[in-house]
Image (cartoon, rainbow, N blue to C red; front, side):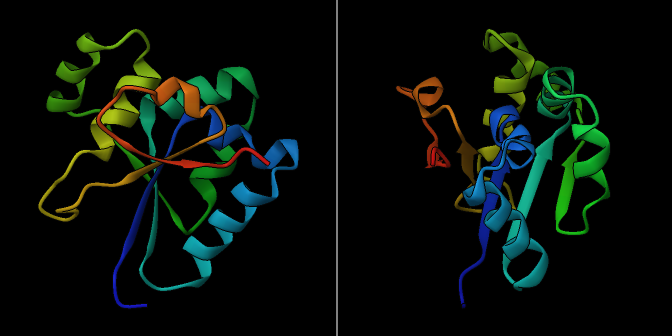
Length: 126
């Protein structure tokens, strides 16, 4: 694989493996096993996922193929523009950066949440 895949897990995608979602499990496996696959969990979305399914944060943070994205000042300022912190931090994390010039794709089991938003979505609905 020549081109890197950068994927941001929203709070619904973070809870999906514990609910038996095979697509989410495969995504996590690829990030661990294949070079060029990168998964990110925005801290605010991780908190929301853990509130919905306790122990989710601890489990995901321990996986070697997942990078937890901190809430820095720029991300904190982006939170003011959205209804939930989880959605705001996920959308912010998907924006282009020097490390990810094309941005990242948001993986979700609730693609309707992202309708009309300027993000690319990977639907993990089985």
